[in-house]
Length: 339
Ligand SMILES: Nc1ncnc2c1ncn2[C@@H]1O[C@H](COP(=O)(O)OP(=O)(O)OP(=O)(O)O)[C@@H](O)[C@H]1O
Ligand SMILES: *[C@@H]1O[C@H](CO)[C@@H](O)[C@H](O)[C@H]1NC(C)=O
Ligand SMILES: *[C@@H]1O[C@H](CO)[C@@H](O)[C@H](O)[C@H]1NC(C)=O
Ligand SMILES: [Mg+2]
Image (cartoon, rainbow, N blue to C red; front, side):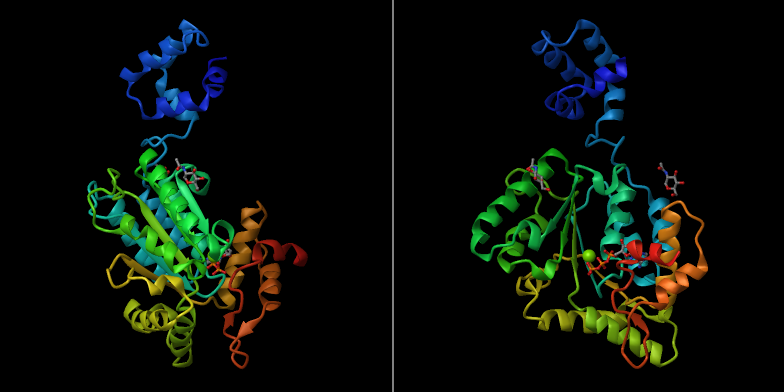
């Protein structure tokens, strides 16, 4: 009975309850006294935690960083990305454990298609928000979906700024994921720059606890080249260090005139805290992805099936056939045909 009552409260009231301390309960409940029985008022006052429990709020009940959870996920669920795992774990832990960060955390994830950039973002979200990617505090923007028409850029700019401002105003621990950053209009990226910087507040709102994640394929070729060089030299990919990809990544990203991100001064102004390279995936990683996809469906992973899935994919370069052309993309839907 009581649970029903909590669930059917109007959203506006729930919002107020989310942000309110118990002192704010009284005026709210009297103003809607007509609708709400006195019994409910008593219920609200004494069982406020139950409301937090049912409705996602910008509170520690719903937003709490799990450091070991993230580390475990990155090392057991994200395959073949030792560099990305290491950098993400370090960056996110450092930021989340800092009670008073000087600027928002800005990560830029780069790499070949299907190597786990969106997947890694989801792991980060899951380690912070109880609701993971479904959290109302996690916002995903895609150039082609949200900002498709170059002619409407001015309207998009205003809208994006208003969104970010509104979102951070209602929860300082908000997360923004910009997918396909390389297709984003340069002007649009410029318009979010103030939020990424070392400002105490922008228009009265502090953005310093927010997380911005940019995803792109920019620099993917240069990461592939470095990984291939290691492979050809007979060195293990785990030997690749950040410095091995960093310079060529920065160069190729800077010189890529098509990628919007780099026309702006995001890099010049050091607004990006971490560049995170994603290496191209090999046959054995595709097998791991297929095994994981079967487990996710609640099935016993079948190595023979996983092997068939991996064997049927395309690999490059043509001669050596080292890296999966589409990474682990489409594995989720493919393995079923091989059972
Ligand atoms: N390194 C990985 N470890 C585990 N699973 C992976 C990995 N890479 C990809 N996958 C699987 O493949 C799916 C597609 O990957 P994802 O969307 O993260 O690729 P992406 O890097 O964002 O590619 P794109 O650049 O094309 O957007 C994921 O949902 C995940 O299931
Ligand atoms: C954090 O993650 C670990 C590993 O996934 C899990 O066992 C633990 O229950 C989580 N802690 C909380 C508070 O959710
Ligand atoms: C937050 O961002 C979303 C887009 O993800 C937008 O639809 C919503 O209106 C924003 N909220 C506020 C309060 O601005
Ligand atoms: Mg992606």
